[in-house]
Image 1: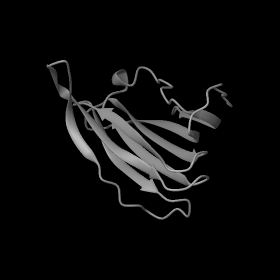
Image 2 (image 1 turned 90 degrees about the vertical axis):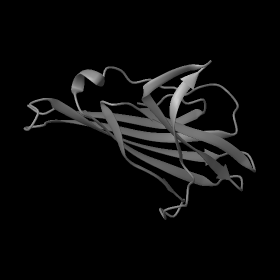
Image 3 (image 1 turned 45 degrees about the horizontal axis):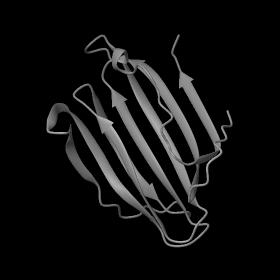
Length: 145
């Protein structure tokens, strides 16, 4: 699936998304492993953006890593905080976030994220919330027979 968004922003991205469903024999529930790889490509010199992802009691972030254009792991300062807005505190929802820094025009960074849902009923919808142009996107769902 190729999606084009007509907005001029300093980045463009390429993403791949895959979800795999398996049955957890100890609980009898179907769990979902979600793998998402997003490559950001800077079309302006010196750009900084934020990256965030959320989880709760029924999901967990198994891996969140930042890779350079040569697929080498880059140090990334991640913050993990409870989500709250306007003095309303949500005790079970948490957010992991960090800053991506692009020193040059044409520089690429890739964020690999693996998330696991303990029960498929909490994997209800996917949202395309990225504010940047999408060069190419691919989504794959693996459902066992």
